[in-house]
Length: 577
Image 1 (cartoon, rainbow, N blue to C red):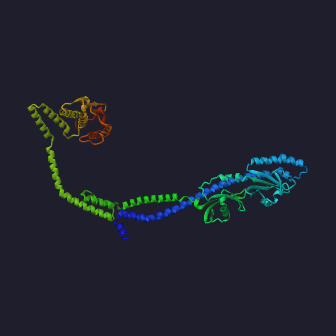
Image 2 (cartoon, rainbow, N blue to C red; image 1 turned 135 degrees about the horizontal axis):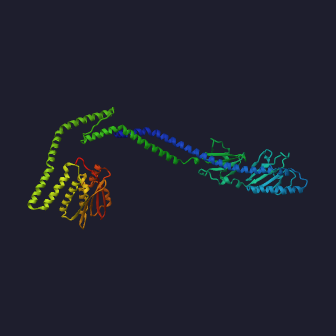
């Protein structure tokens, strides 16, 4: 126990908060999950039972339609006044009787059998002196002793349905409204298999079980039809066993769902049964859904707890972070808190302490900083344009004195280049000075390259009256020489510099006949910073001064050379003028 207490003691504060929240939240969450599981299972079971009830109701309506069709057939016979007259009349002449039987009874009965293919036998049992006529007319004496359904004739007020030796029998006496005595009994024998074929071929909408079944019983609890003969004993027990609930019966310790629908025409009852354990939905899917729900809630809960706990101890983390920065020497922080609790007071006191430390550090090192700044300015003053120009003038004079004209030429170009490049510290210069500066740079490069490449200038005179950014053309020329002409393996290099005056803009073209630039590098040349004074720097300076619509465009193909186009507006610097 002490070991777990030590582990809990040494846990981070945030972990302790999360653990405590989880313990408090997990118990109701588990109870809620169990309750949701049981409710979902019951709901699914009710839905399954409802589906079975709908299916059994559909089967019952189909059987009612069949029994009603038979009922209409029986009505068409027993309510026929012509037949009532024939069976109630005591014929004096056999000739007249024979004509009625041959011309009326026989065609009518044959028509009924042809129209109702489920009828196997149609017979009228008569009690008078009517002679027997085929199977259509038989004597009542044939059934008085041997037919069990005959005893119900006196109490029968409507069509009777009876299972006789596995045969389905329908009977009904002729009415005595027109004649004071019963003239006969209509007897129909039906094809049992065809009559119940809709129940045999129908598949229930739920999953079938090895123990489920469907059967029909009469008012005396005799089974009229069953789709599972082997389960006849279970079906008889169901007819006698009481219902525990509305749709529940227990047989041999096994609980069954029993759904019953009346067949009113035949006074039967349609039963469908299935074990409760089979009608219950598969608990696996419900368990998985419940576990997934609990896990989802746990994830959300952990996230919320993390947010809440982080909010609570965020200021402690910040204070700890500030202390680490101070530990590593960062003293330039303004630490304050608007909170009035203990953490806020601790933060403010730490901030006051840090500010006092900064005051002491500033006081100690201020003199050293001033001293370093003075030394830097002294060094900077030593490097000034006049010193550079005077030095170059001395070199030029010495060169002329000894007759070294090449050295004099290079020094003159270098002096002119730096004079225009420095531009008295100004960021804007005239296009004339910029082009002269570029020409000086090219002259120096020609000397350095032993005049191994050719230069062509195509300058519109109109461009000289406008201004541009200082040191904007020279980097383009430098890139053309270094990455273009210097990389050419064979043949003479050629550099072309154009300045074209358009209506509102000026285009500066710098073209070389070098090896060109591949597509990947071409897409990066104006985006990534290159070594030295790169194109990216020039492009950004132009856009900063003139706007985003101006700048540098690079056009190049492998083996075809490269052209850099700098587009600027026709701009005059008022300050320069």
